[in-house]
Amino acid sequence: DQQVKQNSPSLSVQEGRISILNCDYTNSMFDYFLWYKKYPAEGPTFLISISSIKDKNEDGRFTVFLNKSAKHLSLHIVPSQPGDSAVYFCAASAREYNFNKFYFGSGTKLNVKP
Amino acid sequence: NAGVTQTPKFQVLKTGQSMTLQCAQDMNHNSMYWYRQDPGMGLRLIYYSASEGTTDKGEVPNGYNVSRLNKREFSLRLESAAPSQTSVYFCASSITSGTGNAYEQYFGPGTRLTVT
Image 1: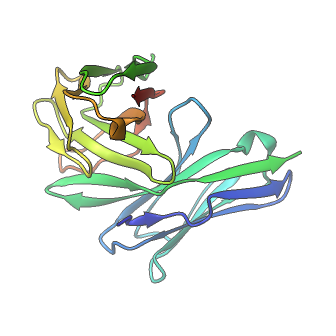
Image 2: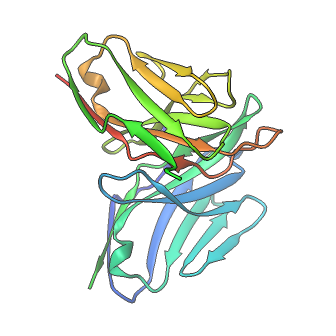
């Protein structure tokens, strides 16, 4: 049973508009959340993260929002650019046996149209 | 600074054959991980090594073994490959604090494995 879920397999957005990618989780012990970006034939690359003690973290065009009561995480990309077209994975970590382990969602494929 | 490297990039095996996937990192990270990525499933943790000299099972360890050869290298072995092990395999590394807090992971480019 997946503890981190990305229910939208794909998203298409016009260049210059906002992209909103969503992620839900079930484990209330998760204390650190991350977004990764993946291009075809490459490994995922870290994009942005947020600790469970915060509700927002911003880095340039990328903002991550955390709603702990709803167990929901979202990534906003403003403005979207064609180079943002990739698969985006959300991930969450929880402490197990004195070590933080990471759980990943199934990914959302973002297509930004010029 | 190459980051995380994996070999081979592609491999085709017959059922029952064995092979070892190699991974190395040059970032002096103490933790390393092996994941598999399957369609619709995201990345699932096979094994991890919190620090040199230790290895532990992840979500899907059956059919695999690992070796943390030194701080840089972490290999994944399939002793008797099965078609269900057809997947893309990613190695990753991260810094881990003395209290076990792991931070963002750095991934290799992946190995695409097909078992026929």
